[in-house]
Amino acid sequence: MLNGKKSLFSGMQATGTLQLGNYLGALKNWVELEDEYETFYCVVDMHSITVRQEPAELRRKARALLTLYIAAGLNPEKNCIYYQSHVPAHAELNWILNCFTYMGELNRMTQFKDKASKNEENINAGLFTYPVLMAADILLFQSDIVPVGDDQKQHIEITRDIAQRFNSIYGDVFTIPEPYIKKTGARIMSLQDPTSKMSKSDENENASIYLLDDTDTIIRKFKRAVTDSDSEIRHSKDKPGISNLIEIYGIATGKSIAETEKEFEGKGYGDFKLAVGEAVATMLKPIQDRFDDLNKDKAYIDGIIKNNAEKAAYFANKTLRKVQKKIGFPEKIK
Ligand code: TYM
Image (tube, helix red, strand yellow):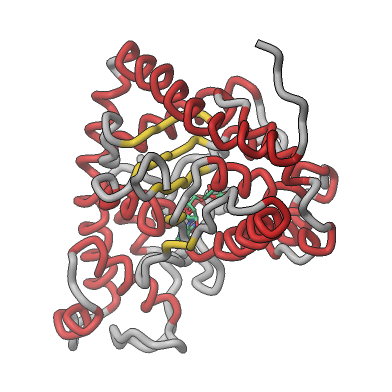
């Protein structure tokens, strides 16, 4: 809760071009929450440097991501959209929470194990304590919910554990957040390997639909999507490729699984893949157009960056000061 209103925080890494999973699992759902919640949507550029980044590229991607948040429908008047690195309270609370997090807990994080195995030459301490910075992000804003895809569930659980541990020592300082994960779209799978999730960092470009892919590219990638050998369009555990496409089609068109199965009864994979490609391209086109328009207005985006960082800092500092006082840091002399 913030100022008597329920609040939420979520964010995305600026490490690549957003893919369809980021949109369907998170961003698309964010847009529905702006009236009920005080919302904070962050470009988590501090998390991004846990993997080596080229500076000019990071800056460019961070700005593109912030612009895409707005292009996807987040109204910057109603949602606080900002860069994590512009609000130092994230780093300050991160340090404090590090001292309330156990190595054993961090060792159990599947995302750390996964990322460490992919970056063997750079398993840095930031990669290890990544979830603590996430906890700081979420707890700074007294978030009631955290709208994310399925892969972030474990990170919300550790956030809750850290918050509960802190509260049990110092009283009710933090709101304990709940994950907000939709049933459909929470785990969009790779188009090339439907047993692993779609990911920005996948080296195979055909595995992901990027939000800024043009219509032809989107249709081509869906046509090439890996599916099983029979030809029935049916949602089932033993048909992960087709099930993934049915789910994507359902979100893009608003149709249920049963409706989709009925629509394509007796039709082949080719027809279905083309229909999915067209539906996704139609869904993304307005976002792409708006993205192009927004990029023409530098001053408008700059204004949002400045004002929202100030708003985020105001609320974040309130929580930070409360925490500092509770743990016994000396008060500043005014
Ligand atoms: P990131 O940047 O990897 O992903 C951003 C959001 O997209 C969701 N997502 C997916 N959803 C469905 N299917 C997929 N294939 C898929 N891939 C990604 C993610 O679940 C996420 O919601 N650690 C976070 C960023 C972060 C954060 C936070 C999130 C930093 N601090 C605080 C919430 C709260 C991350 O790397 O997300």
